Amino acid sequence: MNVQDDSARESNLRRLARWRATARVLVEALPFILQYDKKAIVVKYGGAAMDGGVAQEFAQDIVLMKQTGIDPVVVHGGGPQIGAMLKRLNIQSSFVDGLRITDAAAMEVVEMVLSGTINKQIVAGINAAGGRAVGISGKDGSMVVARRIERSRIDPETKQRVAVDLGFVGEPERVDAEVLRMIINSGLIPVVAPIGIGPNNETYNINADTVAGAVAGAIRAERLVLLTDVEGVLDGQGRLIARLTVSEARQLMADGTVSGGMIPKIETAIEAVERGVRAAAILDGRIPHVLLLELFTEHGAGTLIVPDPTST
Image (cartoon, rainbow, N blue to C red):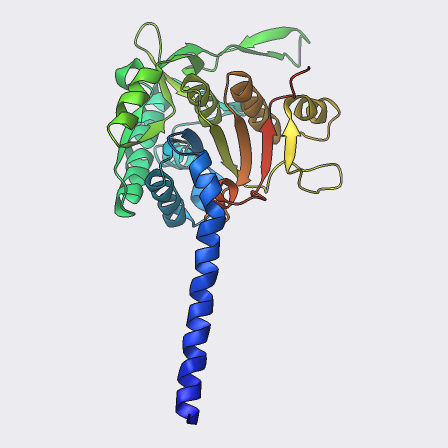
């Protein structure tokens, strides 16, 4: 055998080794694919995850989930995009406890950006990756019926607690799961903008994490996934906590280990689990294909929040 034949043989062996590695990955994923077969998984996508340059990978993950038998439901946000559009239109915007005060003029912009621009961009991305997505908002079919959020603050002058008018900012009062089931049963991937409808047909701006948790609870999803801009829940030394029970998560909030923007995400995860969702995961959405790492590998990719063990 000459040198050329040896070189060709070594090249073929290296190619086969790469293929075998790919085959091992697929085989290792098989138990997880079977575990999630015909199960719904709600994914909240927005903010830092959308800004991280992984939109194409996210769309591919959603399509692959659908092709493996999972029923993905995407709920998206869009705070930075809303802020940018309000600025372009010279509409003033302010926040109370992380919630954007939304008057009638701002609400029109919020709905335009969320239900229009962002929703259709995500739908187009999933369709371009080979999926069949359809964009809706909570107003469609009265899927998300909302109520106005009430907040208060201490007046710095009088030191008295006074009500704060947040305008058209709401929270889910009821989610009609049948609307989503009809879409899912048609073989489509629902992409939901976090807009709700009130009892008098008024439109409400709702936090996307909150909508995702409410939707997951309503359809009894197997898992809720919240994509964020950190690797997950961190302990006091800054190390990732891979798994938490509901009680452990509450303790981390109570003792101050968890603070700031992570608190509402954990609260959403806990509420979803208590509504019957099997588990909730908080992941770094900036990592390419993080959904596949979380769902189809043994080690996962972020923090998983699970129910407390039942007493015997």
